[in-house]
Image 1: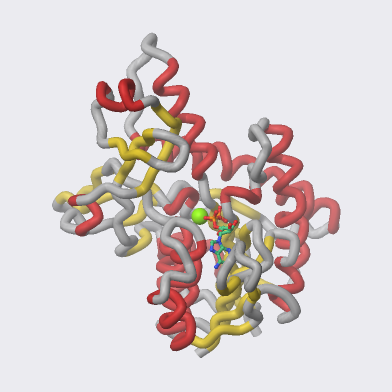
Image 2 (image 1 turned 60 degrees about the horizontal axis):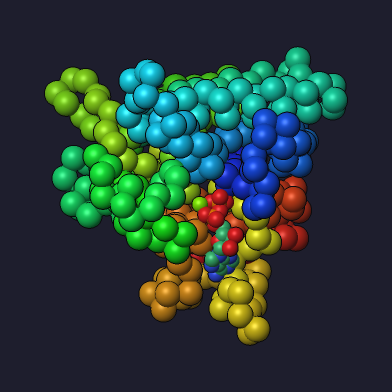
Length: 308
Ligand code: ADP
Ligand code: MG
């Protein structure tokens, strides 16, 4: 019998934790915790790993601002760069973990550049809302060639965050999984592209990595969808005295809490939405948990599970 397929979506904080400056050494050290657990799980599951790229793409955007000696790069290219750099870090950390377990020969792995199609007419393009990259003063922001918005920290560039329509490499990913590969893909939500006749063309946007992962999970036929982040699960009244973490939440309850604004856009909101989408479209299990508790969550003793 074929092993079940487990998709683990790693949050940006799996690589750079809050308060860290994000050196490469820090990023490698942070990855060992989730990747060590994923290596063990690969004995019992066929595994797909997706990952965020917020801090990394933010650093690349800052580099663009700091240097006039070379042409600056569009966002789609920066997303592609982060898929390369983070894919490399995950792959080499995972390789070492598999070797440590003595299963590297039976467990090949591959990291894939991934495109994700978005709709040219997605309403998100009319009102870019996702803040990315460095913080600017009001004076500097007024001179920039792209839209900015005032945030808690200062002015930041905002880009559209359109919905993922389809993962371009879904068949390749499915084939690699069936051949026994652990596949690292859809980094940073994927390189956003629109269809232009028979070709694809990159667009200035970022796709939420949790929503892209849910789309991938649906299209590849994943059994267990696990979102790993820096909190132990989904809480009601997060950060308040009456905060209460949920162990299980039904689709109906989750929809109600979302509507009541308990899960903010840009952090817990898309995770809950992604888990709900996966369960609505026939997935077996969807869990939101901490990067320290991936194995426990798969065994059913940690995290928040969205149930039908
Ligand atoms: P990631 O990089 O993993 O995508 P995010 O920062 O986007 O992480 O989302 C995780 C964060 O969501 C947590 O660190 C927490 O501060 C925040 N959060 C907001 N609302 C909630 C909630 N209701 N329950 C749990 N965490 C929440
Ligand atoms: Mg996030």
